[in-house]
Length: 331
Image (tube, rainbow, N blue to C red):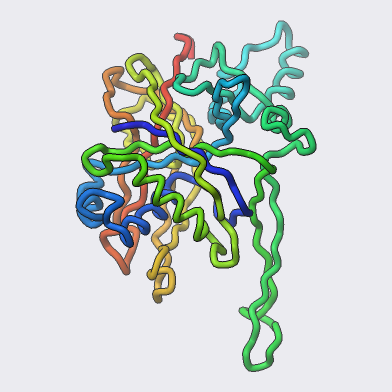
């Protein structure tokens, strides 16, 4: 599979986080409406998905260009701090370092590079904002509560129970930020990255995720490029999207988990049962120690089926692209 980066620029707030499994679902609906986006149409590729995924999307990560060098700001790996940072010379110094290191929630990774904890730069969110050239904020996103009303057409007012006013939290990125989405594509199913770009352009124009009909989830596609990362020598991998791992390939996993309460898009969003069965996933930034150093695939994870009663053929992206990690022997 070929590994690409697609750069996008947020144009509005987001009701749904830009995570890989959700981006995959949106692209599938675009392929459903436009069969030219994947070879043979979506139905053919979904049948092959468990053995041969046609596309695997990452979550979106901040992108920084510094002196013509491109970097990606990735979430700090979900590992104990003691495995990522060296201890101090004494207990007091170690306690102080732990306090400082907890604030370093991001790592800087240069384009086409693997992750090496011996040389990786760990930074705070405030430092990340400075690299994005935004010195007025200490956070790359902020959560804004938006009020909603449901009107009772009998009384023309709000009321109690389902007519009671409610609020939802929306995500707004700091101005001028660029985001990178990594995509693995199977050349037999998608022969040109422009097919994926076209799908994402349409998603960005119409809106991504919750409340897209009210103007949320807009973004602009800036460009795409092929990446070449050496996957020949690594002991562990860093996941770039939520996934459902196949544990037969790993000795141990450091991760945080969450439950995906998915919902159908497209026309099925208005069906009698638009909700999918919940799926427990490990989040991006998980670290997987490999059992077999000869692992040849450019992705990990598994396809998730059996999640929909209204469309049994529905799949959830339980795969994730990864970056190789070089670890010291004692880790």
